Image (cartoon, rainbow, N blue to C red; front, side):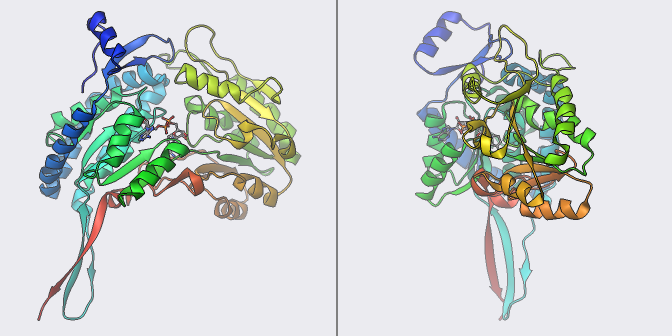
Length: 475
Ligand code: NAD
């Protein structure tokens, strides 16, 4: 399950692709082939499950301090290979190098954070008559972590780090388009000294390898991040085995700007809240709600900020936004901006090779937006809709008028309003006067169709355990 380099025999490679057992990884900024990765067959996946079952016994039975030490060693190797991991993320996902370095550092930090878990995964002692009652958090055994292509490295780590910390073996299925950082991380886990098979990466198609993990009775839990339809189908399949499942799905998050906000700061930061990672971010604030009394003033500063977003070569340290992940994704995004779309202004993007799409701002009244797919659905591209609102009640109503509920931002200097609106917006991750969404030390997840369960934060490892109650009679 290792990637082949460009230097491998082209003839063998073409044969393998023809047989459908390899997947070409493209650089989205150039459309050049980075490498090709063999897809795991059903027989190989079965072997991986068996290996994971054996690894779970060794890893789960290890002294907590030893597991902690090995996870710290793993984090240390991620730190050593930070630049290599960042460059892989640039090559396979087109992320700007500055962001990719941050993502590799985040992977290290998530591992370090959960390295503290094995020695702190305490149960409780509950007062009862006639004996001692204690609880344990037992590992589940083998866990499947299925991840998307938009933030391949951080999202994989959010799943496998707490799962490993709780004593499970992990089978990680990366997205077809972005398997490279996952494959490298698995090598580092082995080099750090984690038992063989404790973290295995299974590249391949969702409908084949992903499905295999979901349906395999030896896989005790699926931790899935991806689209709503696939998440729903996974949940339905898990239900047939009463399999544990965590879902992190899509979003259509608001950025609410009240008239009393620091408008300059709100406008200057708004492009990055939606165009970061070319809008391919489940937390993208793709619906801007701006109080009518400051709408014109805000839009003029926002326009300058959008035109200032540096879109270009991801290898350039000054680049702020790279390309979309694939030709297919660009077609999908284009379809959200039909010829008669109410385009207010646009930023720039390079021409030529690469899956480029310029930051695009659509604007209009709430009523005029009703029929527009870009207002209603998750675009997962650099397209934002801006709509004016009258008062707090209307802002809350518009913010909640979506089946999603992942994140959102609220800009106001009124603390009471900040609290009222934060409590009223139906979303799992809100930020006031900032666009922060994800910190490894705080819980992350969605309301409504944005997901089920939470990742990250102090309790994430518990979601990879079963709570066991034991009563010991003293009589
Ligand atoms: P996707 O649902 O198409 O695929 C996600 C993963 O699931 C991939 O690894 C894919 O191979 C696998 N998969 C596909 N079909 C499967 C099946 N039938 N059984 C098992 N696995 C299957 O999503 P995507 O296009 O890769 O990613 C984009 C979506 O992910 C967006 O909707 C976005 O909002 C969402 N996302 C959510 C979060 C979050 O934390 N809430 C984070 C990132 C992305």
